[in-house]
Length: 356
Ligand code: GDP
Image (cartoon, rainbow, N blue to C red; front, side, top):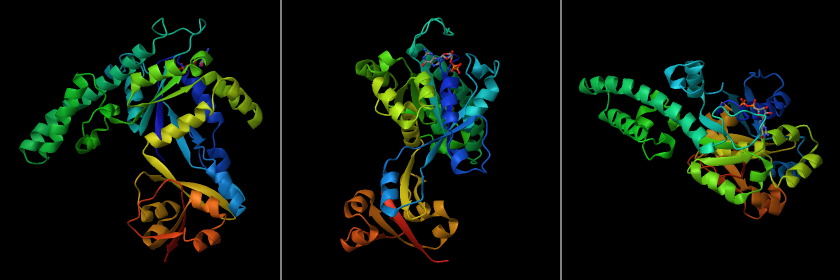
């Protein structure tokens, strides 16, 4: 499964957030025999449609999609020079499919800030500078190699061009994920700043309820997405029953928990989407890459479904709820038979036809 690596300076609330993520661990409940790595937290992708489907189909259980987060040891200045945990740290980030940077926005006299003051902009610059330096080192080595390979006609010139363009951008202080540089020719390099990026602002209640302050911070990181949460409140929410949790959320001016937000935005940032299936056994969300076609979507359930794919019977979630049953949706012409070129849409409720 694709994972999101959590990074950030020391004392910004990473452990507090990660602790909430792991105590919320859904793997244990849904897949009792799965091995859970201690540094992986798996959270459900919130999707209220599943309960509605379960009501229509009288499903025994609900299986939502999930998102995995990996806790990566704290970054230190000089990580790109291999200081302290540096190299291991960079190797761990390289394995993640996206990065979530936790940024401290809370003030607390009892919690020391490594730089002596709470300054989100500086913190982000510190982390990003380390990632950019690491990428520059990777690129400088690669460019030497690519120059040789292009001369010997062992590599396509587009590889060298992409590497040089990426290097130029980084030297101008631009993260590759926010640039318009196409890094696909040099994907093998696993450049850190080319990974999709989310910023998680760990803030006080005062900021949680301050829309203009949030807009200001969000603008600072655009086009990357920003999530605002209070890690301490998140760790309290985990222990509350749903009604009390709802009350605490409302009292702190939130409509959705920070973990739910993080799951939703993280899932989309990874380039993923879901489609739905339902029956008496389960109502379930399946994870596919955005833009996947019907056979590929079928393959997520079983490889035989992909190999023997014939058609997908698709009813949109809205049509299914409006008509109240598959039979009624069919009768009203709301069930479509789609072929192998069909591009899956969010909210498709699907039954595959296949031959074995
Ligand atoms: P890490 O070093 O980034 O993993 O940070 P920790 O999660 O260990 O948090 C450092 C300290 O800040 C701990 O004492 C936490 O209790 C505290 N802390 C974390 N999040 C918050 C928050 O949202 N508000 C306040 N006031 N303190 C927090």
